[in-house]
Image 1 (tube, rainbow, N blue to C red):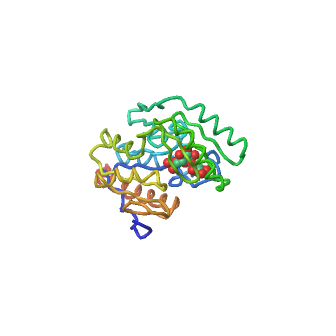
Image 2 (image 1 turned 30 degrees about the vertical axis):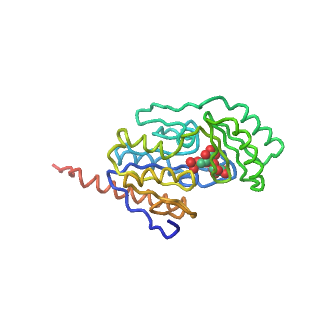
Image 3 (image 1 turned 60 degrees about the vertical axis):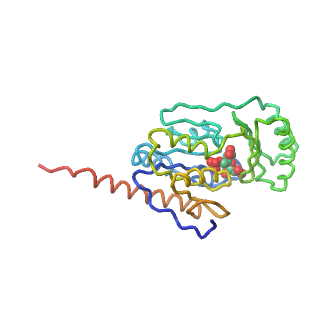
Length: 259
Ligand SMILES: O=P(O)(O)OC[C@H]1O[C@H](O[C@H]2O[C@H](CO)[C@@H](O)[C@H](O)[C@H]2O)[C@H](O)[C@@H](O)[C@@H]1O
């Protein structure tokens, strides 16, 4: 489905909401550490969690510790490093790297010394090599990582927005969402997932398989059923969802009788 996909419906009170981070909740920036998190994000997530019985999770390529840093003081269920890590609603975290890749990280850092516009983002379960500041370095980065992966069958390469990432084989956002949907408070709810990148497609497939709603943020081909134009449109939709869910929740609670 392409840009003609309709905007998403309102969130029902029985939704399980899964949200991508970069490019969906936070505008893109030249480097991973130069993002500016919109001030309304943390209060909005807190309110949505309260209104959806806790069934809100961040599904990101970032590591969970990094998400916690940007969302402080909030600590919510998360999948990090494209599903290589997951923290459930009880706060229990799982996900280990299938081996030591410090040699790969070092090789990426050497490459970045030779090409200072590259940005290396080491992760506990992989590494991201960013070439946003010089897209002409894409082929060099791709060839370098491919050769490093050639003898490491437990790892795979993921292409993102001006980034190449090495992550454990089998890790995906779709799998992380499936795992959340087996557990309280997500199980039995209608899944909604929004994301902007090709790595979000496995998440779209997971929610569509459960008759959920898949929302592509921005342009580009996608299997998502619905579309929002960009980060601003995401906030508009989430704020509207909050307002509606709050009204529904007030209607369900009888008004206090004045003496
Ligand atoms: O799944 P997401 O939450 O969307 O995370 C995907 C990757 O996002 C980050 O990189 C991207 O955003 C940066 C900041 O805007 C940008 O500079 C970079 O070019 C993008 O690729 C993050 O750094 C990665 O770890 C995530 O995997």
